Image: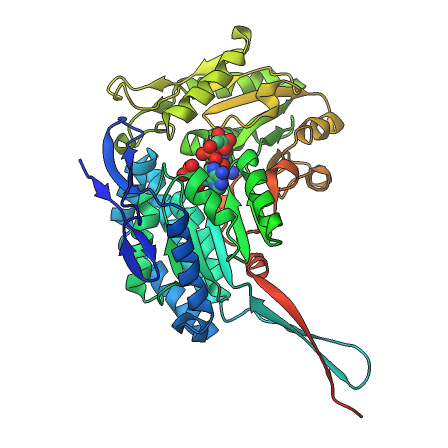
Length: 481
Ligand code: NDP
């Protein structure tokens, strides 16, 4: 079995934590040891922030043109594609996700670097009409040093999603990955050095959330914080950022509904409804974790989904089944706790864990529940596992009330063949993205993404992320008559 002992990247140097302490890593598929990472502390974060500061204040990085930054990002994307097989193997081993899915994730990782590589020299300021005799320019400037705290569910993709636009705008970055999924971030940091990123432009420091993560979030030396994770930790890092008077982008998950009307093309909808919760074993911020079904077709839809759920198979990442294990024992316990809340009469169907799955892996059977009351905890809280709940609705206004009836608002899916209703629903839904007769739309590197309410704020992905990672300076020039 592959074992990996990772290092931090600080100021262009690969090194262990200053304390030399390490954290063991286990495979979610087997519960067995697969390597270790530096258990970094505040002083490691201090060193990384200082290196990033030096990079943006006089270092080689600060002198790169937009074209050169774009070329570096494009080169990194090409290296990710070149090493896609190895990266996918590592991502799959470290997170437990089926190899097929890890390959898609690595492809998207490369795509983020390509996209922002192409965007770096195509995004600039503006001029404004104003009083006669004045020339008004709006400049787009980098923020300085940006901090990035990412979760374990899509480590490579989220790293690329958050670092690439920041680097495109000329910021220097310090990233803390989740201790449960550090291996691809560590490998990507090695590829970044190979691509030629100057010292200090990218720093990757591993360690626990409450030590390394909290040190980064509260660091006086950062100018912006990007966080993806739980609403609870999101609130604590946002408070730390606020105490230093810096802005942050928070992407905090969701309880995203897919709304199925009686006139929907159900045969097209079924595979998408299942995949939207099964992908990554339901550990996806934008998972379609609730299905609202019009009462007239509720029994039909739930029966067919039940048939499909009963055929699903969970097992070790390298068997490449429908889904792998959850990331950790903690997450497995959490999801099983939610299943205990369900009344037995609402259990529609469960898939299987294959018999040769190691007993110490973190497997949970994919589960379909319904009908579930819209006010219950199962319908209100993010379960973050392969659990899909179904709730009937009678008409459009009840569908909107149920869909908007949680504290979250990240993504929604609408299934109907009525074009006017498609737009009415898109307008009424309180969330950051609406998918009509589709869901997820192939990764969507180009599509602005972010939530409302408990799902967080700020937008990443697409060209809009270049706004997120830059600031506007208004320059007023009096040029006379
Ligand atoms: P967290 O929000 O705690 O973890 C996300 C990131 O924050 C990780 O890098 C973590 O580090 C870090 N972190 C943890 N505590 C702190 C802190 N005090 N200061 C700064 N950084 C910190 O999520 P969990 O892993 O505990 O997962 C719990 C739930 O969160 C899930 O069940 C799911 O509902 C939600 N979640 C949502 C995600 C999304 O994509 N929106 C992704 C992951 C989880 P470390 O892991 O090393 O401790």
